[in-house]
Length: 112
Length: 119
Image 1 (cartoon, each protein chain N blue to C red):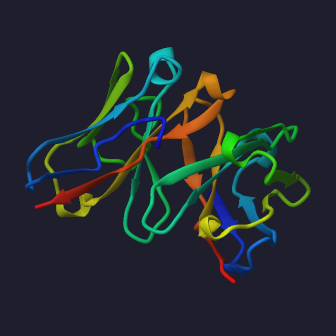
Image 2: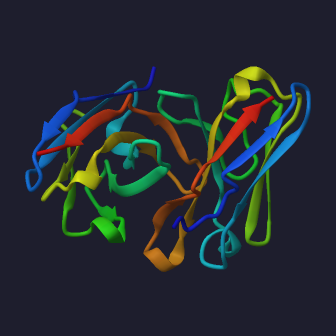
């Protein structure tokens, strides 16, 4: 049982927009901690996709964006492409766990 | 460029220990922390712990406390993850990642090390 809750799967057709939610609580996202998002392609290490809730590292297309409200965060992907098919994870921090980092359970994105 | 190079795959028997290394290059090791994450086959990411590259302070995941120890060797810019009393459900790919601040996330990752626990 992950501390952060994500939908197990989402899907969309090429060119469409999809969002992935990440729901936490008052001890993590709701406490004001930043949320980060990672993309994991099959058989590879995760890659930082969004940091500090809404910032993109160099090289990440602006089709990817992040936001946060209350105890939840979201990752939005616009102009969906076949290469976006991957697993996506949110990550934050939890004050009830002495500064531990926490992950969501992951969301499998399927491009139809 | 920043690189984290991990040691090779391991096969261990239940009850044994494993030590995975993560050699950093391309940045000042003592200016960043290292986080360890594992991923069981077909499962999600599980955070294991964090160690400061500066002073060796650690934070461990509650469910692994007592079985895992994180250390660093600043002379070789290498971080180590030692997991004891291995069980079959410790079979996973183990990753190290650079971890600076709560606002920056884990910005560089190692390639992963497969640890298989089997009798």
